[in-house]
Length: 145
Image: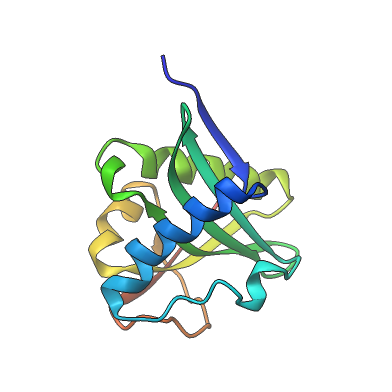
């Protein structure tokens, strides 16, 4: 059985894959320029994670702690070579657990319309976010954990 690990991106190798997946799966399809020097990469309220399957980094996620109770899922992406294999559900389970471990019980997001069904299957419902999205084709979703 392959080991699955959810870790904060800290090593150069993890950051290389984090940026690659983010750029290829989130930014390029929307014709947006990806900036690896954005302030969110040093802001302590932002947290950046990767998911390992064995020695492969298969997914990345960016979350931001908004206040004492709420966390925003800024982005979640699965490497193209590992999509449709359950890693999205695994990543969301780890993110939700991490939120609860941080004492936060609400997770909000701008979900791509193409991913709405995925998030609704996980119990997410329409929830006001109140923050501008980088994309137009989104719906505001959230969940009380």
